Amino acid sequence: MKKVFYIITLFMALLSTEMVLALEDINLNIDMPKEVKVGENFTIGVNVNTDRNISGFEYRIETPMHGAKYIKFINATENREIKEKAGEFYILNLKENSVFVSFALFDRPFNSDFHLITIKGKALNKGNLSIRFIAVASDEDGRAIKLPPITYNLKVVGSDKDNNEKTDGEETGSNIFSRIVGAILNFLRMIFGG
Image (cartoon, rainbow, N blue to C red; front, top):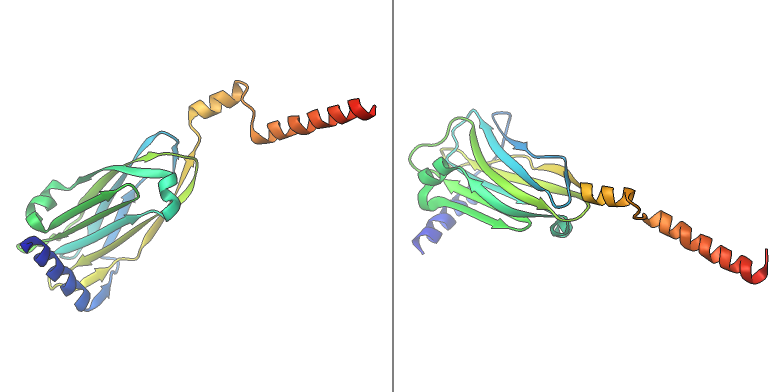
């Protein structure tokens, strides 16, 4: 209960203080593929580049509601150094279609670039989706530093197995439709002669 109280107090302080928009001295560096194949695992690496002191950070990765149809997050590996420094003030919440990380440092803030998290995902079905990255940092005075949200598009394509099956004789939707129309026309010719 004590841990929850401290976390709520920290976030209330962040919300009640002046919100500062991040300038070029803090930004997210996201490493992720633009395209993956169905059934394939992929990795998203998140780094924070900063030239200012950071005493807290809150970070979310979100997919649209329909995103769970195309991908799911299966694992998240935190930065152990941050987790150890933050102790009970470190939160990692992994769901199939979202990831949430939060930490607060009270003894010594970060003042250089750091790796935040590595997320493993799995591609489930073909399609396109947008993955949104949202972050708010806290400076050493407790002021919130809102970073501009970042949106990456991920394309999930058919697997090599799907492509091989099509070349081995599996018909695409348009080929099936053409064959059905051809069969109907042949049937009508037989009935009406022509």
